Length: 465
Image (cartoon, rainbow, N blue to C red; front, side, top):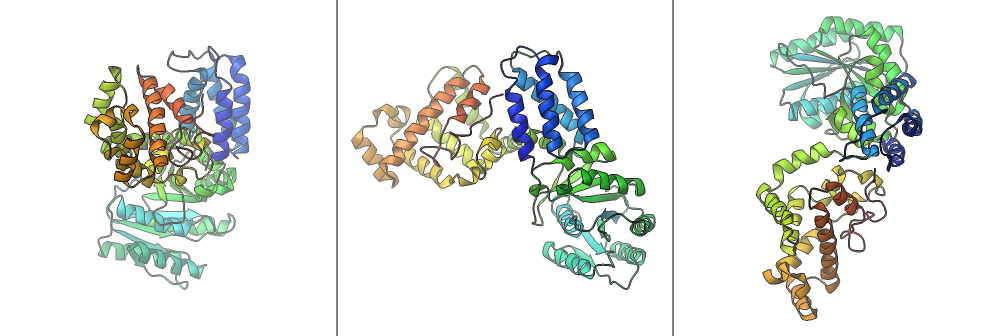
């Protein structure tokens, strides 16, 4: 999702590099490119116009601080406005009601509504720790009831049986009564969809809404329909008091226009986003994190949260003090960094969240084999402490002893030493807090997947804004 938009915006931001300040003249071309990129991403025209106006107003005359380039300053403004369009924060479900809290699901046929009911039930059960029941009020598609029953069995939540002979309002009333009897926390009601909006469909779902008085009425919409998704959501919002939107099939949409249009047009927040077919492929929608992904900045917040939980802070502080004093980055330090990477789920997991990974070839991160890093650790463990502190001591006989002790080859050891040299250079650039220089250095760094490095990193690297 957002791949095309990310690529276009990254190129636009790079053009601002080297400018002293952001002026009306030097951002005019950038705004034109941003406008074109958004339209190509199938973002609704009124949304694009409002977005460009707001960015232009904030960007012209913006002072560029010493720590930021004009490109970075412009990105900061664009990111803030992207978040404003999609909503400042995740809009949580409002389940503060006497049990069962009823959630009514609405949407067109083919949007993935029934599948989303199953995914949401799974999320409520596992993440919100709720006792969940699902029921189908779709009496027009017999397979819908059976499909929901199968999903309920797979994720192990309660299923209330219904038949096509019943009326939707009767089904819903009976489901609420049974949910009360079983002390269910949340009741999810699936409704009938149509291939297009029609009066009969709207009348039926209005009657359902009136009888259930749900705490949440969520509109399920296919992200791949682009700005049509936002227009359809508006039609439903005019007929029903929607409380939020669920975007489905977002993993198959390389444009992302629906995500940027829905809230602006409907005034209703996107609460969840479907990113795959599995029952756990539903995530709360975080506008700030989505904005970061659009701008090719990765999911830094999630990476930080993971680091807070898993990184050994004492070791990190020890290394920081050592580097600050101008001492070198030896192989013992390198081994500690390898351990920290393994603690955070391995290299592929970290690369997934790092800024600039969108510039790598598709699937490059998946090509990283963490067993290579475990091999590197075994090689270092076969060295004496003196050799780890001073790798220049490693002559032919020492290398043979180390590789025999670690069950590796001479080329594995040479690759490790090359990798260490590159890391040393990066760490020198970190001295004095020059993190940006370090990130740029990583662009040319190669790891165990290529000729001594991360696959594809030498060709892609990090974007230099």
